[in-house]
Amino acid sequence: MVFIRFIVCIIIIFILASCSVPEQIPGKPWHHTTEGFRNPPGSPEKNNWLSRVPWLIGRPFYALFADDPEIPKDHVLEKAKVIEGITNRLGSNTVTWLGHMTALLQIDGKVIITDPWFSDYASPVPPFGPKRYVAPALELFELPKIDFVVISHNHFDHLDLSTIDRIPNKKEITAIVPLGIGRYFRDSGYGRVIELDWEETATVGEIKYTALPVIHWSKRSLFQTNDTLWAGWAIRGESGVRIYFGGDADYGPIYADLAKKYGGFDLSLLSIGAFLPRAVMRGSHCVPEKCIRIGADLNARNHLGMAWGTVRLGDESNEEAVKRFYSGAKKLGIRDEHVWIMKIGETRVIPKD
Image 1 (cartoon, rainbow, N blue to C red):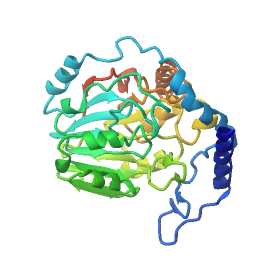
Image 2: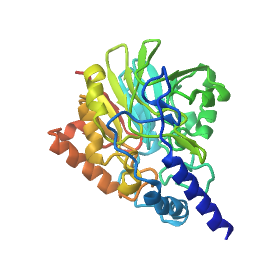
Image 3: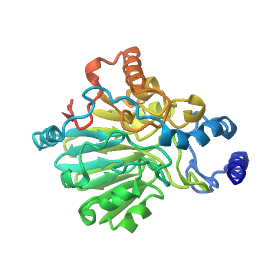
């Protein structure tokens, strides 16, 4: 009976929250509102809470009792090969997929890690919530010395406080984060923390970071929604290599608009998982055919599909995510060699035109 009352209270809170109309804060950009941040104009709207509640209520228990999905053959490299792949390409501009949205970028002699998640659960109350069924390609202590941590948003599989607390040499690392997220890194003792709003740029050493609008949202507790910003990142090295790190995102006209000012990337890092059911994921995660269109709209030459084959967040299979990513690329005329589906732990050199 107590549990039922708790669920009813949650539903009422969500309904009341969805009834409020955000207003732009005077003197601030359009996405700053009285109800927190919001997505760019023309973005797909999330479905109402009533259509999502049954799935959301059942999901923590499903994650607790469901069997892990079948891991694709040769999906994960042996640790010795992971280390070999990284060390053999020192001096080159490279990307190593460590799992989920965690990538290790070596750009012009600097090491950047994106959305580092090295814990077992993406949840505030483990063992309830999503549990990874594939471990990271390396342990934190096995990584090269990190110079930058880049965060896309505050969800638990992207901003993992246990991980950011355990990263070695924190006082020598610069954290690049969207508005409102910097406090987690300051509290953890990072040497430098830079918070950026959309279309703001910071240059640290020879690497330039620009926060770009994406279609998503933020939340870490029941009563805190969209109080911190979410962002994609344009990363440019001294050599001219350009990387787009998209975090989680749905598709909309904003990416083609951004291309006019920021487009032209050597590699886009795109989230292609957690897209079903659409009643839940619409406005948060794009279907893979639209994910690669984000990269195409931004005039990226190569596209790496991430956020699949690590943790079960949606109802789709790993095979469906990959198949639809390739299918979407084919419809856009993108050749297979520019569509990167990598093994966890694999390193590739980022080609520069």
